[in-house]
Length: 480
Image (cartoon, rainbow, N blue to C red; front, side, top):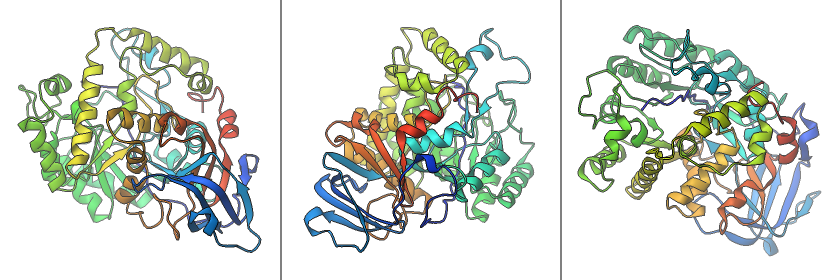
């Protein structure tokens, strides 16, 4: 199945800040260098049970205490903020996010055939970082770039404190073979070209790489080797190369889960060719069957992560997700019309609901077997998944898949930090780590939908008003 997903990867975080950023002050609600969040509920990101009546103390961007409120230390000059009834979780680590958006997909597909030069997407470097931060994403991997210099500029501006947004692990342009359906992608001409691209974009500051659907095995092997030479990781949304082939070549991560992207069970599969019917072939596989179980063992044995992107597939299911006014309000008029048009075209007998359930079951089985599952929304597809909002929806869908709420938060926080090699700095609420955290009204440990009720997002100890960030991009998604 070919899905209009254009994917990106980004990694390096900003250095810890001990003062408020140079701009974006209108969004900052907590800027005190030393403060205590009093009487909060804590979901610490480790997967352990939530804890009631806790205090979190922050000193110049670092967590210095997380524990019972009645034992909190007295910090000189600390601002104390009473927050009974609120929950604090670690900042989300979005592992499949983008700075672009499929804003006119309905128009581009109206005739049933793509016009020249192929499918294209719109960069949204203003609205994407703000929406992501507003929803609680404090670190993100872009997982595929179409405007690489724009992505690097956004990273630079955020790192310098000149614009609000998450720390970014920046992915290079897609490593894609021929023939690609996407106007903004370079077509690799062989293994040497793959190495050249990795080397060049490493020199420009990219820190992650992503292989795409039509890459050959030789090109993928060369790209993986080059990325590892630069001490970087490479993930893939594959089709021409099967998952077992990619695992054998040394890939670090595989995007979306196998049900929608692994072609190993397609009977007519030809080497280095992307076949039709990948998802249909998985529809015939049982998750507890020999084929799926062998894939899980293979992934775990080779320490290959899998990135869950359930929201982008849910958007292709009839009647899903429930329409939210906040999503429509954030879109430009054209983007909203495009999405609603494509949503209305989804046939009632679509096979996607069954495939989505199977993907959920695979992810639960993968984690049970010891696999590292990452979380991200992939804000592309038919346009129904937006940055930030989609990251929250991913956590809700992980709970629907069968994970507990605290397990889902763990997947969306600590697991991403582990993959990025930053678990000593971010991902859990532990003293000594960076004060990246999300203040939520309600109790997502009991009602996961409360994950959407974000009041304040702290990045490096600076608190941003979620509602003000969202309001600042009203009508902008698809435009800028």
